[in-house]
Length: 360
Image (cartoon, rainbow, N blue to C red; front, side):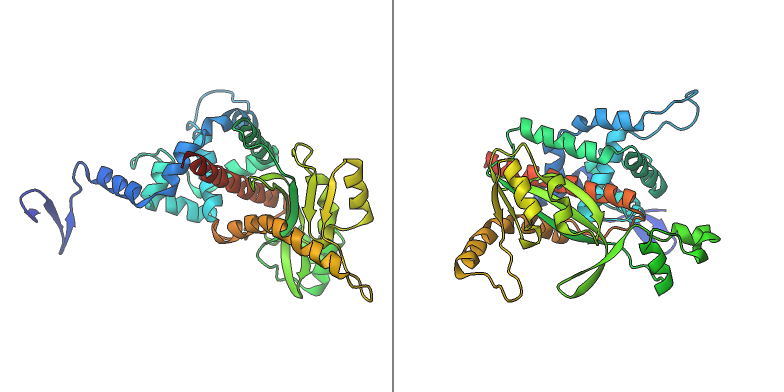
């Protein structure tokens, strides 16, 4: 039975409820409304040249196929953009699948029609894991950085180095099991239980910061002072001291000579490395027990903190605007993929912002 709300909009009766039958232009009107309200994904989609990533994706996903039987794989750019969405909102694979089905802004960002098949959570997991196994996430990150250079956003005015803890779900292990994991061994109780072992992260480690304990990994990054873009990064377990990754994240291409970092990076080794590279040391001075810093050095540290705060803003953005830094994967290889995508998503978002500033 068909009823009418007015002369134009039919209502379809279903049982005791009434449903509005969608009109021909209802979807277009909804999308136009989203655009007027300021859909950030629409801006991002127009700004980023997504096909820049295709050669890297194609190489990583290349595999021998005996024939063309079976379902045609999803487009690699579509899958990559889903990973970007996942990183922008820190969604699990299941949440990502649901949100794509539920949100018009997501389907428009992915250039999907409502009737098209959407990749499920398992497909997304497999795609990301394949990229992880091939080391493609770091290559995609570097690819975008080369694009940034070509667009004029080269690393300028020196570099700022810092690390941030990336937590993972806490493992409920016994004291004996934790000791075995620290020694790089598989606890005896897990060896005969493969299902349990698959749920245990034997690569993550505990660390303390400001008297509080954390379990997970560390994201070591290098940002340039001028554009506040991430230029290099390394991932380690949380127990690794920040200074251990200092050499790895230094950027030889920054046009500035200054290097800022907090006092955790102050050591004779870092001092020598900066001298060897002919870089100016702007690392915070470190005080010691019975040897506090002089007033002059405290003033220097305060001045350096104003610059170093820019890298803290990067971590703050990842925590507050990208849905937090919690990683739900297991093992350092997959953690590297997740953290690498988080850093890439930040740079993509930052680039879009810088472009808007240039156009204003």
